[in-house]
Image (cartoon, rainbow, N blue to C red; front, top):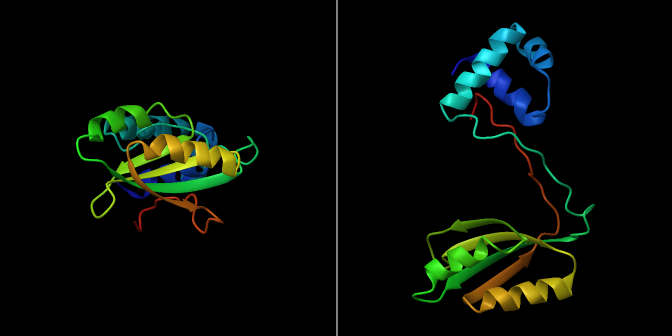
Length: 145
């Protein structure tokens, strides 16, 4: 990884739709050189995918929540299969510590949250926290990382 690759990654993290020409201007390389470097970064698995960020409130999902769950003994595999099908769930991570999984989800309102908690509660003990505001939502990973 050199300064050019870090510059390319920073530009793409800010706007994955940025044209090769725009990225080339940012990092002082030619467009073909940038294209070649992006391809190599993809081949190495450094660039995993390109995507967009959605404003969930604009879509009508006003409440972001974190739900930690201590899954009942013997239900982990069933829970893992189930959680992948729940549309409100954006992320689910296996953890160490008291709770074994952490879920990030979005719901429309408190009634919607209650229904989600009832559905998830079948698998174990929940702790639900509402996201009031976010201090860091999207951080560009750079060379100093």
